[in-house]
Image 1: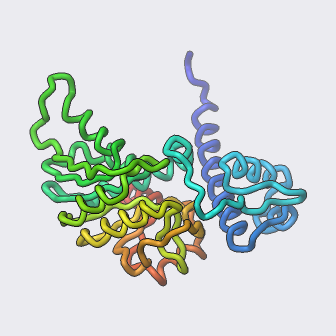
Image 2: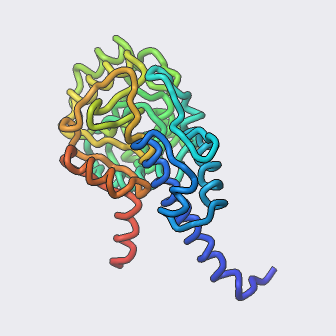
Length: 292
């Protein structure tokens, strides 16, 4: 069917509205976490939008499981510090942000280097971006990450492609988020040294640093950090302010944090004070496009 002249501009307007909605919801989520709750009437004034728009934003955040709606507003979802969502549940959240972060992080990987990818949905997205980088050695404690490279090595012939990555899987006990942890994983990592570690996290904050709800995973992540010359954390904006049961690294042990454009300016400023390097993936990608 031929496209009507009005379809082009309206689709652009729709994209702009979606982007604005994402920005509003990121700001609302940041306010909920910082203040412990928000009210609809306050948000309508601050954001200069209608009552109905704010309620739709709160509905969307509630469906994501990051806020709980209450009469007249919303409060943070109360999770215990030991709550650990499964891989599939995490995979459904912030898909666009994770893809942006993965594409940005992939540019940091040079051919022929030894890298480590921790377990997690964002590192899983990164693995798919690295398949065309030649001669990598990839250490991982994620079966899913290893499977991404394994599938690419065997396109049907049963033989590895020239330049295909060499993958070292640590072994260990599987967590709900599909990371391999425990003494077997720790011993394997202890004897290895890699150029860059790309690390997914459950939570990040100034006070707790990097944290996870799983004690065994915390120890395995400590081993990964110690074995890396450079540590790059991959975390979308929803991870800021989340604290798990066990901390495994301070912020000053992180060389670079790659996050997404959903992070508020106030939180970015706070992060920049405590992190050596901060890269906002979406903004970087847009800036590169405008510079062409």
